Image (cartoon, rainbow, N blue to C red):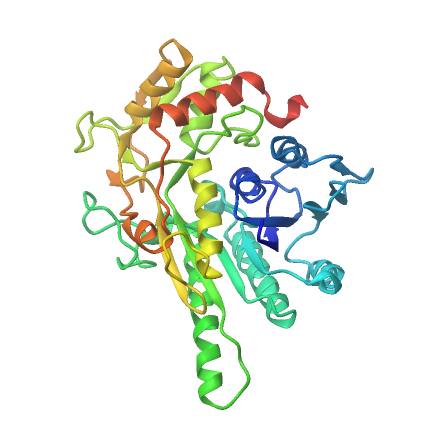
Length: 389
């Protein structure tokens, strides 16, 4: 491999973060990445990192007795149990790696993410999601790491003016968001934009201010699991997302799936969403890093720029499509009942992902069948998630 880069990954033990680690550590990459994961394990487990190491062929990954740190024998996968809102603790990580060349970039996943919960404890969501980002950006600037990929969300679009149109990055954001979680994502996008612009203003005033490279990735509906069945989504309690709930019904942990509304203006009356395989999403982060450092397969470069990309398939599937496709993967129908509509649910929510393909050379490759088959493989091998380890 021609080059080596060290990436700081916040919240890297979670669902999307851990799958992104596998994509970063893939030996087929033209760049050899090493990763330093910081996570407070509030909604995740170190077991995901053990699975990452196994899939990635890394030897000797161990976590110490108190669960505060871990790494493999070559230091390609390093873990530090750190809350990103804890400035001194996060600073210690930057100080630890500064003599080794520091970090080339950060991928920022850390934060709370349950839409329903965010309506109940909004102050906690603002404190954690915005506070962690503020702490991270300050330390990145201080230690000279000025490249970041941010895990945003399609929720920033709120309720689209035209529900049947695919959402573009240039569409209005922030105005019709229906939950606190989405507003924190929107606010962080604004913070990144203001912070990026401030460096140009300071240079115009004769100050020494180096450019930041920023990629904001707006995810649609990540689903599925690693094809090995060794990694997947492991929600605590009742799943908030459709696919893990369907999977738990399929293994008998729950009696049925409730489909909220069958009177929408869609072919089968149920809501349509843009579902994206988590490994396609993971590859999107690698594409974003390469785009920011000027090594994109597209030949285009996002260095020094503020970039925003939708990550989705551009294809919509209804809730009933998803339930039926999962039944196909399982080999039997999934029990489901029809319930009333939920407040705030929209008819259709789909991405226009063409900009990501044009600029980063990224596009989704996995099918709905892949999503369901991989999720089912994970569920059957790990009926209780990482708790089976």
